[in-house]
Length: 299
Image 1 (cartoon, helix red, strand yellow):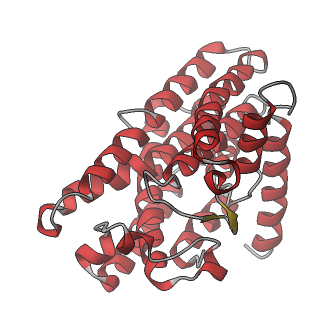
Image 2: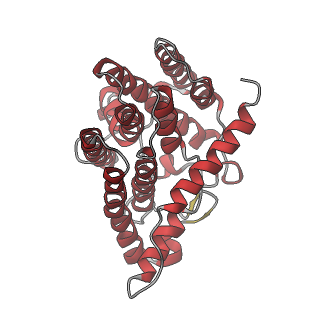
């Protein structure tokens, strides 16, 4: 794709505008928590999940605006997980997306509430899709996917296993456990993003199932690459402190399998995802390039 960088910049800007449109208005006695919520979301980031959602929606011929509140909701859920992940009781990180984390700026109590607020407001936002889509069954199914993939059988389940793995000896953390953590903590929301785009666009059951598999591959590859960057990156490049995995005694794909095998796995999973994508009748060239970029991303 010749103008991929320009197209990506345009799509990120479009995604930012959609997310900003759905952020809560600040004011009232609860204004501080809303400010903390908006501070967390407006810190920026790759906006990968809402972009993937929209691109899959377009891949299957989606036309309505129903995808937009789900895009904003997904970024709210992703952001809430980061706010809580950065807390002293969890990873105790001071920087996120190039600036001070929410708990450093607003205090621990308000950061916890901001995370809670983002999770609840995400579902309040997603519900707005019922007014934008005549086939409410699509919206209801998308809501079901969102709830499950963000919950105890998705992201929260993965986070639980991740925390408990920190107390285990290195030889007790198996590849199977690590894949469970990666699948649920990271891949679940990517799977959900892509599945929701397909569901709202009216994709078939087979197509939705294939999209879930693609989302799994992307999610695992993305997390393994994140583990690689935690070793090789820097605060200036990543916008967050590196070496946090080692600091928190976390077993990662890199520490378990070695750097070279980790890099090989990122490439294998990403290539497989692109091949699966090309099996559909229609093609989204930008989506293909976005997935390929995960292999070589440096932040």
